[in-house]
Image (cartoon, rainbow, N blue to C red):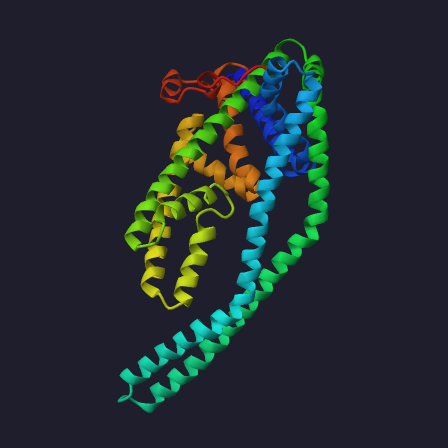
Length: 379
C-alpha cells in the first residue's frame, strides 16, 4: 500500500469515525432534548402540501390555512389519544384491582388441585415424599403470593410514575404544538434561511440527504405495513384455529399494536396467555403461547430481510444495526441507525463521500435507492 493510499485510508476512517461520533451525540443527547421541535417540524413538513393546496383552492391566506390545518390535526390526534388513553388507564386500573381476586379465585385453587392430584397418585409411596409435596405446596403458595404482590406494586408504581411525568410531558406537548403553528406558518422562510447558510456542493449534498431520508422513511413505513399485514394474517389464522370469537377483529387490533417497537405483539399476547392460565383454561393458554412464539420467530426472520431490501442493506447488517441502535438509543435507534447506514451507503455510491470502494456488482444487487423510487417532494 502506497503512502497516498494509506493517507487516504486514514482520512476516510477518521471521517467515518467523526460521522459516527456526531450521530451518537445527536441521537443520544441532542435529539431527546430537541424532540418537541423536531416533531413539530416533521408535522409541519407533512402538512405543507395540504396547506398549499387548500390555500389556493379556497383562496385563503396561507397563514390562516396553516393555523386551521394544524389545529384540525392536533384536535383529531388529541381526541384519539384521549379516547384510547382513558381506556388503557381504565384497563390497567381494573387489572391492578383484580390481581388479588385472580390469585384467590383461580391461581391458588389451581395449585392446590395439582398438589392434591399428585398426592392422590403418590398416596402409596413413602410418607417422606408426601411431606416433601406439602413443603413444595407451601413454598409455591408463598412464592406466588410474593409474585402477585410484586406485580401489584410494579403496576401501581408504573401508573404513579406515568402520573408524575405527566406535567413534564404536557409541557413538551405544549411546546411542540406552539412550534408547529409557527413552523407551518413560516415553513418556506425557515427552510430557505437554513439553505442559504450552505453554498455549492454542501447545499447539493444536504438536499440529497433530505430527499433520500424522506424516501427512506416512506419505504420503511411501507416495509412495516407489509410486516403488519403478515402478522395480521398469521394471527387471523391462528386465532380462528384456536376458536377465539371475532378472531379477525382481534387479529387486526393486535397487528396494529404490533407496530409499537417496545411492546409489540407480546404486549397483548403474553398477558392473554397469563390470564388464560390463571382462569384454568390451560389448552387455550398453551395454544396462544405457541402462536405467539411462531409469530415472534417469523417476525425476527422477515423484519431485517424486508427492511434491509427496502433500504438497500444486507439483512445481517440491518439486524445488527437494529440491535445496536436499540441498545444505545432505544426506539429512536431501532429505526435511526439502519436509516443512517443506508444514507451513508447512498452517499458513498453517489460519490458525495468516499468511505469504501464501490463494486459495480454490489450496486446491481442492492435494491433501488428510496431517493429514486419514491418522490420526496420539494422543500
